[in-house]
Length: 391
Ligand code: SOE
Image 1 (cartoon, rainbow, N blue to C red):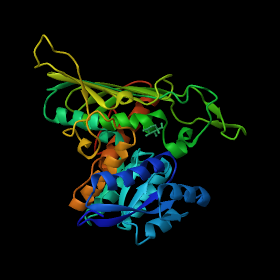
Image 2 (image 1 turned 30 degrees about the vertical axis):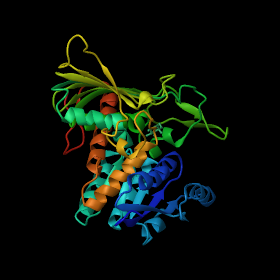
Image 3 (image 1 turned 90 degrees about the vertical axis):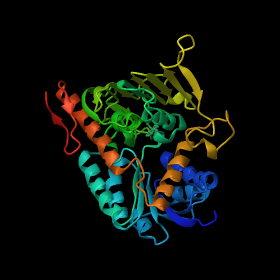
Image 4 (image 1 turned 120 degrees about the vertical axis):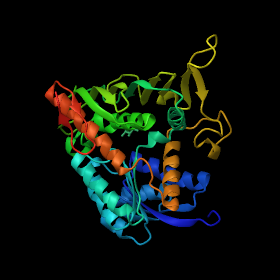
């Protein structure tokens, strides 16, 4: 344990893709960032005891709980990490906060604006007792995107005119790809929109430091029925497969967004471009260690997009990792997330993204759904209210 560091017990619920990503995040945060609160992997929660025990063995979790309430009640758990599908987030997070446990909740924060609002109110109440809550929009902690935020905040882009954001995957292109909980509205809330579109909604609001004030959208479900994974029958797809929308930012920038699971050949392409009066930034997660920066104040004869290899110790998070040029991967964001949350708790500060940030994303998701259902019109987003159609 680091000098003067105090232990904090982590109880994590869910052990699939996100559970694995978070497990290694907690472990590496402890080793590489040496936070003043040292995470102990106390309890892993999952209904299937055998599967949870196998994961606990692989990632060194000390105990397994098959009931999430029992996990929250443990005296040795100080922070509850929620890695379950969206339909369980609100109930677990509200209970954990009421029990005085810090909470990290996977994205999207909830399956509806109403749930997200209740969670945000619970987080506000808990804050008064020094209890912290954060939502896991992990891509904010990709060093190239953290650097992009730094450049925008320092005014290097000037006045923002355009935001262009896409999140492209292709794992549903095959109509025989099996049904999963991600395709069920009751479990996932929405499809590509809330799963991956939520990331670019959050990222663009984070990068610009502004809010999306309205949208005009269209969404579609290309394949309505899919085979069940066990080959027995089919499942109805009740979520969107793709969403496309226009948006406006509070500072006046115009935006285009696209989220799809049908962009054949694009595996996890998060593409964001910002154009301002003095410069532009471009990022693609499939080349995640680089950031493209165009600075209009550089000499005209050599002016052009500069490819910045974001691996210098001066870059966000890089001081804790490898020498320059030794690239980071998808998983590092989860260590950064864990380290930042532990530091915020230790410092008595509010971690970001907050539940209020998660609620803001949920409002945009709801506005996109509303606009798409109406098939016309601009849907304004009111931070104090649910989305209202104005035209
Ligand atoms: C599946 O679409 C998924 O795992 C998302 O749920 C994650 O949030 C994203 O980071 C990668 O794709």
